[in-house]
Image 1 (cartoon, rainbow, N blue to C red):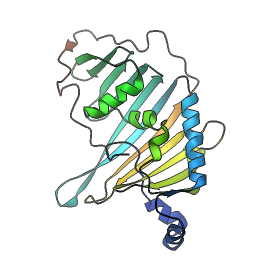
Image 2: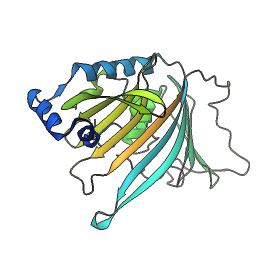
Image 3: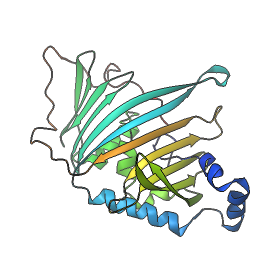
Image 4: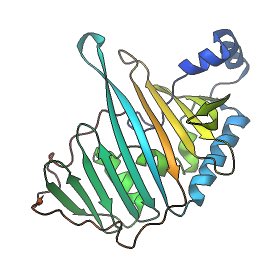
Amino acid sequence: MNAPRHTRLCLALCLSVFGPQALAAEAEEAPESAVTAEAKAVYERMRNSLRALKQYSVSVQSSQDEVLDYGYKLQRNSQATLDVQPPMHLKAQISGETPRLYVYDGKTLTLSSLEEGYYAQTPAPATLKQLVNGLIAHDVEIPLIDFLSQGLQEQFLAGVKRGLLVGSEQIDGQTCDHLAFREPNIDWQLWVSQGQQALPCKLVITTRYTVGDPQYQATMKWKTDVKFAADHFTFVAGKGATRIPFTSDRVAPKKEPQP
């Protein structure tokens, strides 16, 4: 996984659970590029649960560190609701400093600037997977959509040099398995709910070798029994809304400060 994607987690919390000596000892025992069988099993449970979902809505609360001059850090916060109906429907409403709406109906992608009354449309590929790949290539980000899409792929852990199951913890009232992974430039942690549906509950990404070790954090709340109306993924411009070229940064600001 590369740095812009939402799947890089930090071993800092592992140190608080294992203690530095225990973690170092386990690292010495395991060969380089080792992901433990326990960690792989939890990841596979999550992948299978995500693949089994016919449609879902997930609410995301996220924060992103922005490192300024002299290492001074600011935390940017945002909220998003993603309504997804694979393989060709997506509606993402994002609040924060730049509120916006993304709607994908299998043919067209619409980006709308909710506060300014502008929107842009462009022809889109036929599947959500292809759309996500295109968004990444053009530096357009929808919170966690790349993780939720690419996390289904078998090669998702290909860049991981070290991975382990830390233990179990409570996240928003759910008992979750806590995973920690290391890649060349990032560490990432993932909490996956135990029980019948193994869904991601929390993600923490730490960018290493960058001043201040900035982090991205996101917590997720899932609705898997949701039913969408037939026109839910159809964009209707508001009264007085103005259509502008898709390339305009008024609708699609340059990449959000996310890892």
